[in-house]
Length: 224
Image 1 (cartoon, helix red, strand yellow):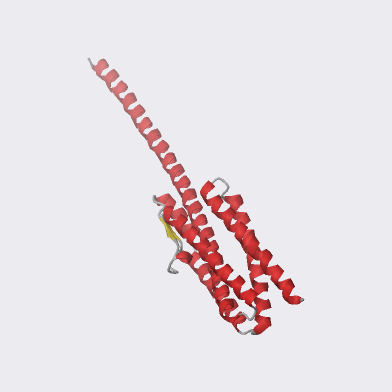
Image 2 (cartoon, rainbow, N blue to C red; image 1 turned 45 degrees about the vertical axis):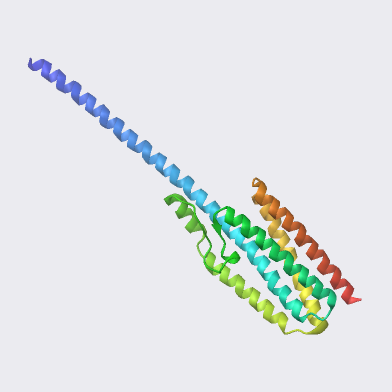
């Protein structure tokens, strides 16, 4: 009888040890899965922040051209430059509206397209939120610097008058459109798998390329 009890206790001990080992293994597996899910979530969050910042950069680019164009509409002495400035303004306003509509469909808020508050988007999940917040670190500060730079450029240009203003405006626009094209080409490579967004970038690139070409042509005409 005692021998049977000993055997029973031994079997029970083995079973319990096995169960504890299985539970530990299950906990370890769950821990690894949770870590992997968190890692993936962070990657998604960082990708989301990258997209927000890129779209914000496009919006800031459009805003800069709009501000410069408004000044030229008021201050340019050559009717051709005034007409070109109006075209610049309306085209970049349209570009921003397209971006705004796209961003709204993506449940994304872009500060440069709204009221100047911090860019945000709903990403959900602790890992995703952590990745997003990490990616957005100092984004507000960079936004402020960009706006300050635009204000300085506009103020500097405002000091010029007559043909000097016209030439300076065209030169500024040509250089800005070139930089805008580079940013758009980079985006087309980065987001080539997003058909809708890619179409927006491609269309905008066509508009910007046209502006750069026209600005340079006007510059040549005014030098004659």
